[in-house]
Image (cartoon, rainbow, N blue to C red; front, side, top):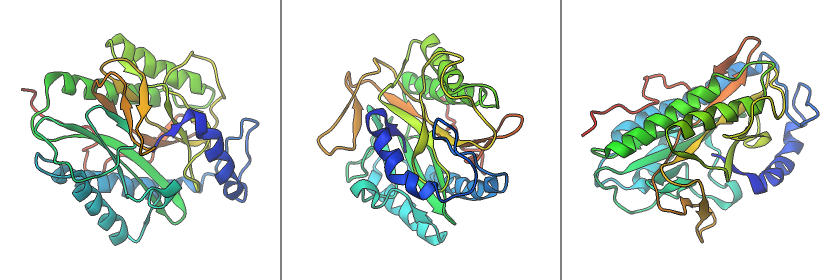
Length: 289
């Protein structure tokens, strides 16, 4: 689940008191440096989130409802002996965010039926032994349009371009610049209103991980940093608005939007992805019509 940049400071303040009790130092930018042993906990949490998303593949089809998908996700979290990070978070009542078509992020599951060609992002965050696993990926109901396929491909590849920049000595600006460069080369736009975030034993923590920017700017990456990268990409303009429910963010021009998210940890030589799909289903595959 991404953070809105205008309230990210609030998230950091409310959860930092918990994070301060953990081992490891905190940088002058407020970013926790985790210890090598902490990677194992993040892998357990990330793997569960990925397994749940793998299982969602058979749940997405025309005529299905997003609330039925969410009910199944809630059951999978409970069956695993884990907790959902989103249930009860700032009043949210669901085990996932499900964002369909022009919904950018934080879509609330409901009774509306999916239609043939709908694209949707399913975002799941679980807590396993105190560690947070946070991931989202795209799914399609039926046969997507060519422009939807292209949007999903570009968004996935933009995430991987950003992850390729994760190594000690690079900056968070390098991550954002790589994502922005890839997206804009395909004449699409990067959403500015929402960003990735630090995590570990808290849901949201410093830093803000922007999906645009200039190379060489922002905090320097260090071994032991844990955070999400979760670019949201629009076919049209980047502007968004949040609906009256105070959660659902949509594109202002009603253009299609897509998102992929991984949780990663910086290693001595690069990074580890905590939320890799065990079944190899992170990116949907289909035959374009």
